[in-house]
Amino acid sequence: MSRRRYVARGVPGGYRIWDNKARRWWGDHYELYLDDLLDELNGARDYAKDAPSHAWLGVPY
Image (cartoon, rainbow, N blue to C red):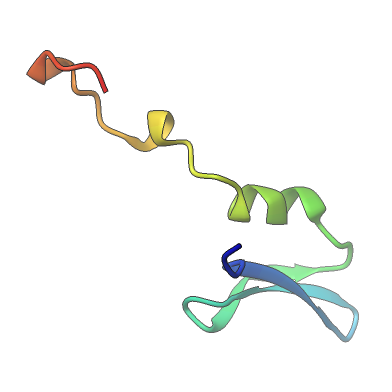
């Protein structure tokens, strides 16, 4: 299993999101631990949503 890109780290007063790839904080300071946000950030990529339409080639993807 690969290392997660985004992780929540405890800081005084709540949590912050750490970006392991960019090696910097991402987003704002959160008072609550946000499982849903981390799941979305680290979730499997939806290639159907991200990929351009190949209809102009006439080839299904």
